[in-house]
Image (cartoon, rainbow, N blue to C red; front, side, top):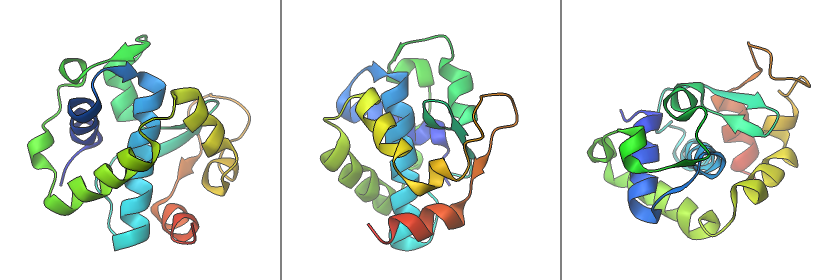
Length: 141
């Protein structure tokens, strides 16, 4: 199974450098739609509800204190993604890849999975957005 870093690397190889916020949200939506469409995660990493939207802490640890990231920074292996994983990510990129990190963050703030788990601050631990919540909410969209 791919990791969040592997998915992030695939996204960065496809779209080029971007803000860390945008990368986090594109990985989040890739996970959400994989769960909604196939009932299987792309990566095992947990997603937490932070102030600026969903964040994958294991991915954040690779780019913290960086505004912009590239594939070299993340250093994942995009070859670990299956053909189906790539199809899900590509669908997300086609639908949302043109949005900014702020637009994606605002979008997540309007959606139930983040809203149900954000507790008002970023003190660790943050609320974890479960696979079940993602599958239920995004299968209806």
